Image (cartoon, rainbow, N blue to C red):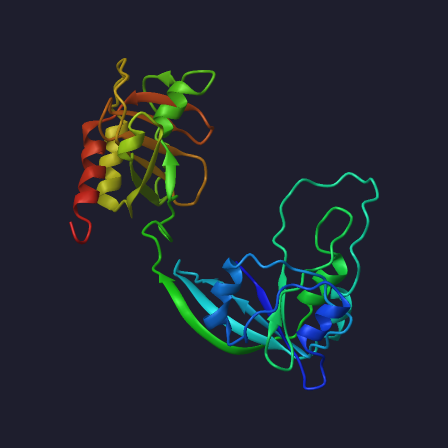
Length: 315
């Protein structure tokens, strides 16, 4: 987010042209109109900034910002806001502080977006002074605190971007997920055991299903993007329980899956079943004690997850 300031001059304030004679200053710019009209120009002109002159007498600050509001349901709204601060005494005092000399201390290697100020004289012309720096080249703490403490009044605000909630939001699923079958068979130091499994879902516990699609450019990868989700109903839950009682060992196979689904406990306790919907069609069952068992994916489980996706609204 880019933040800009506009400082307004008074009739008694010296002109920017006069101030420039007393101390080096940034080039004089045309009359400031508003954040909407001028912020893009300010941000792209590559202005040469100079310290605030002792002869300048600004009386107010205007801040241009583009805050992003995140709603609980996943919607996102970006606004263009212009706000004004009239009490800027502490800010002006801080801006006139000198840069601190380097004192030999070890400095953190990191970036910082320097705030910038636009000062207006009585004629409305403006310059862009810079914030004083500490010994490591960052904004001096006094100046940053003065800026943070400004009491702002909103002058104008408009919504410039709105994004609906992503499909995965509030589903209990991740936007992307690794393929647990691929992970446990290729990355774990010990391969999962193969054979009979223990049902990881106790009676009465809600079971949630998240399905993922592997992007075309990641066909040999081990993660997928969210596709759809649903809670299993009583009939689907009974179908799952029957299938888990008759699983077969997984055969040797190296065909990558392009779709997979994960079933997990709605109470978020340990216990899950991850199923490849194509490729090798294997599944991994993780029980409440953390043990993982590799098995062939029962056709009934694969069909159930696929049918849930086919019944989605709009399909």
